[in-house]
Amino acid sequence: MATPLLKALRILYPQSQISAIGGRLAQAVLSGLPIVDESLQYCLSDDGTSIDAAATVSLLKKLKFDLAVLLPNNFRTAILAHRAGIPHRLGYARDGRRFLLTDFLRPSRRSDDETQLQWARNKAIEFITAEKRQGNPAAAQSEVLAVTPDPDQPDQWIFTVQQPNGSVTTTTARMSSIERFAARWHNYQPTPAIDYYMALAHYLGSRYHQRKMILGITPTERQQALDALAQLEVFEGQPFVILVPGASFGSSKCWPIENFAQITATLINPDGPFKTRVLIAAAPAEQPLVDALLKRTAITAGRFFSPHLTPLRRPVVPLSLVHDGRGVALGALKEIVRRANVMLCNDTGPRHFAAALATPLVSLFGPTDPRWADVFYDREIQLHVAVPCGPCQRKHCPIDHRCMNRLTVPMVQAALLRQWGMARP
Image 1 (cartoon, rainbow, N blue to C red):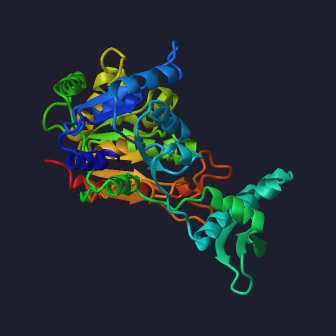
Image 2: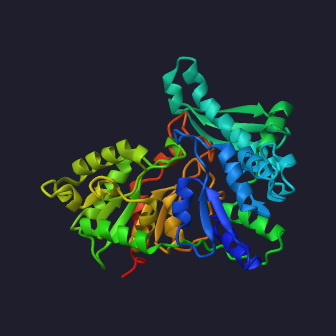
Image 3: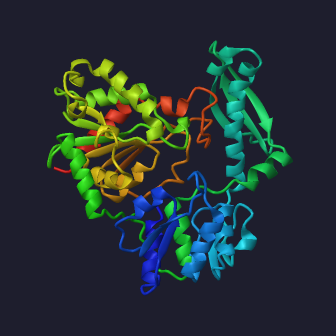
């Protein structure tokens, strides 16, 4: 989502050396992009688990940069640029780092009405869990039907609650001045990351306004992808769907695995509308999720799962199996996504690959506000169900995960059918 900014910087500074520094994964994403002259990696500690600040500062000093454009909002990136003596340091005044920046923008904050609404959503979760904490497990099944402002009492909200026995009650809660202050402290207005970054380029004088994300693919990455697809016997013109069941953010972003299994069974059914293979993309830490998906799909799909075939030739296969179990590098995944007919995913990183590479896309949103992650892609179908407690931005749901559970299999299947018609011939 930072690539439109990089394009704007290249146009603004056509003769300059533009370097990008980040983690190992950022390097793989940026590889093959002509708008960046080089991609650098943070220097790591001896055990490789953390950034070696002194070594990174030394590296930045040697390269003698004139300007640092800081995309992460954290304190660390600002202190590294400051200690490296980079004369111009531009970023957002967040995380207590204003004094480390020479130039800054202030992020937009929510209006008072939106701040109170977000507070009320969190209060709705408290109502659902209150009796559960007091020893009444059935209370977890309470349903907050509506959250509305009280027309007669400023700062007060009315919660309409359906109890497990079916009775409907109302209760009220008022936002205190302390709660209002705390909510405003970090209550930033949801802004698409593309626009958030582009505002930095516009501050520098750029007139570039295109929001299209850009990815490059190196010849090596392309060959690695072709080798992986050849192992899977997926050749030019043969359809396949990329399925991404995980999310590094947390479990709250993940659609139930049994629903993914039902969709997968539909996709591989030789008598169904798709008749396609499914490739599963997941991070190494998400392997238990992949195993659960494969197990449930085998049960749901029955004979369509083809257990007599070798693992690499089955209709559903995780990309972690290719290359003798080494899996697919992130750079090679870009080319595989580019060749896919459709991607089905949670709100997660590979979604942006599909949008940047013009692959039809079905994205499932639950606890997160889609406004943060809007990629302005006309071949994406975003599915989400409004619930009184969301979007809550929580990593783990403390109640019943209703925002994702109410995304039904028929809803997702209908979206996939629409996108299948847009798939590449």
